[in-house]
Image (cartoon, rainbow, N blue to C red; front, side):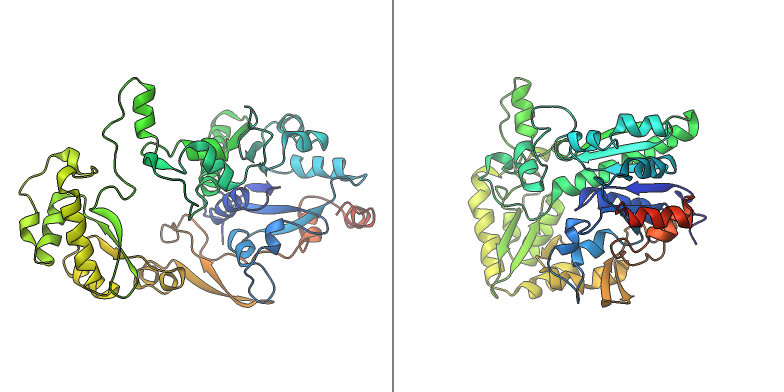
Length: 398
């Protein structure tokens, strides 16, 4: 039952695809909203075809589209404009990730949608937003990250990111914006046109990565830099004897002291350190610290180190592979993984909403929908007659 959830009674019309929008709408669905995924008739969301797969369906698609219903539309069909107008009129929230020209061409841009439904919360999720010189450029995560300056923080050489930060930042920002706009609508009775950019969303996460540049922009030197990318020997990754890797995060003096005692090198730890040393390179002590940590790690296996550090609650943690993380004791203890029976796939794995213990989200999600599987029931619920649904199918609109 979702009647007691925060977004119970809210209908979300989700025209987005791939990652930021679908992740956002899944979160809104977890919070109790009815989410209708609108897909292109014929091939649907491209992420349906992304590897790896379970038996047939994409793991990626399943992971961000659970708890939704799927309907289809051919925006070029003769009846598409009238059909989309009725969908918009019957919804509380609309998410889309079209280019501005495509949305306008088909009458599903913010201005058109808000004329149809003035109380609609309309969120456009794109790479670079609705304005600015980069706005026409397709917004894939890698190129957005490159444009923010955060792909090479601290003057380090650029490297391929290990996480789709811009995608998820935009999905989270869109979710926050929708919730805030719904709250305002409750109080003032007005809709909203929300311009959510992956670039903007990741940019505002740059307080650390852009720190020195911010200082220079204000006329300061930007030096010394904050060392959070390996320049600080006490905040870095180290290889272990068995060819694996351990993450060392010994920023605070008390944990550095505990670590030094644990490895039999208490003389390395000063009684007191200046607070500015926390994320510094540690100056003349850099190589001494780095060598002591490296020698210890290379003399022991990864999990042996982890056990020794865990006994003292020292923040030195194994770098796990994805497969190791899936079966870790902490993931189990936090209830962050669920195995779900699926009619076609047999069994799939679900990453649980981190709010699952709060009572704010659904206990379970329905599996991600097949393409167009819910055309008839969704449209009936939105007031379409059986004859109208049949005509839409006959005309190739759905």
